[in-house]
Each structure stands twice: as C-alpha cells, then as structure tokens.
Length: 214
Image (cartoon, rainbow, N blue to C red; front, top):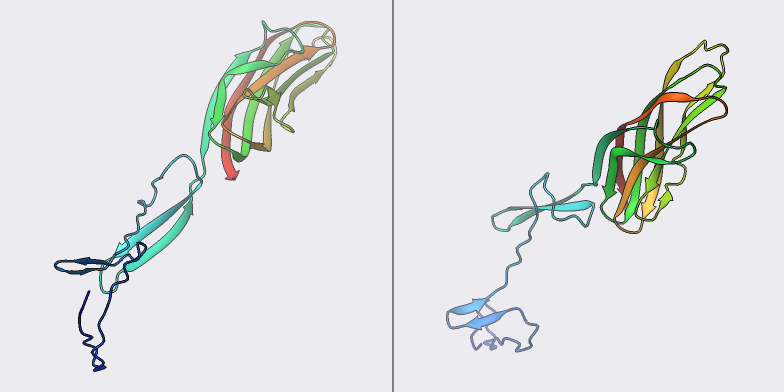
C-alpha cells in the first residue's frame, strides 16, 4: 500500500504492507482492514461441555477501548441416587447389588464417593451372631472401591431371644480415582454363625459422588 505518513514527521516515507501470509492486516479497495479479536465466554451458571471441571467466563463492555472481564469457576460433576435390597433370598457371604443404587462417574479424575446406608435384621432364638456389611463396587473394572467396605450391623447373642430385631446406620466415604467413565454401585452381604435370620434389608439412603480433581 502506498501512502504518505501524516504523523507530522515530514519524512514523506512510503508505508508498505508486508505481504507475508502471517500478516493479519489486509489491504482492500476501501482501505486497510485491522483484525479485531472477539473473546467468547459462557453465561454464569452454564456449562460448555462434559470434558472439564473448570469453566471460564468472558464478558465484554464495549467502548474505546473495549473492556474484557475474564473469570473462572468450578463446575464439578456430581450425582446421587437411592436404592434398597432384601437379602432374605440371597446366600450368605455373597455380595448382592442394591437395586437402584448405581451411578456413573462420567470422566477420568478423582471423585469423593459416599454411600449412606441403613439396614435392619430380625432373627429367631438361637442366633449367636448376625452381620450385614456394605461396600461400593466398580462394575466397570469388576473390583470393590478400596477403603469403602463397612460393617453396618453386628448382633451378638443377648440370650433367650431377648432381642428379635435391630436397625443400624453407616456411612462409607472414599476418594477414588478412575482412568475413564466408570459405573459404581452399592452392594450388601450377610452371614450368621448359628441359627437363622429373616427380614434382612439394606437401604442405600443416599449414594453420591462429587469430582474433586482431574
């Protein structure tokens, strides 16, 4: 582009546009186009995708010059559900899935997974020891979540059927890292040393997860 400098230097030097491909300035018939960068953000409280846990907000205030406000906010994945299972028809020392208590961790990362569980058990005379346990199980890899097993109930003989039923609560929480999407569920198991039991039920009152790190 040929022209004269109007900055008052009096040099009269011609101004040229570098033809290099990386030059963002463009010469047109109507004048020189100067590129303008427009940043794109998202509305507060929104989400861009399911592949990250930090969102960036960008807000423009038009003027001369333009003002840009850039901020970041955490948007961790989370989820929760409930479920219940009767153990009466299940063999002893067998882990049984709690119906409905299953969640999907959507992406790689470290999650805090928690299962608040409650159970009840009844028994006949002569039972000396009755136990119900719970754990969180990774269905995707076929293994229990480390440190998640809990003894929810342990009954020892009170003599001559002095007790016929009992109820208890427990909470299992663990930090758990996965390499990809994973399905987790709550499981329950029971056993006795002597005698028979009935009405063995375990509820997963609140089974939940929250992503805490990538």
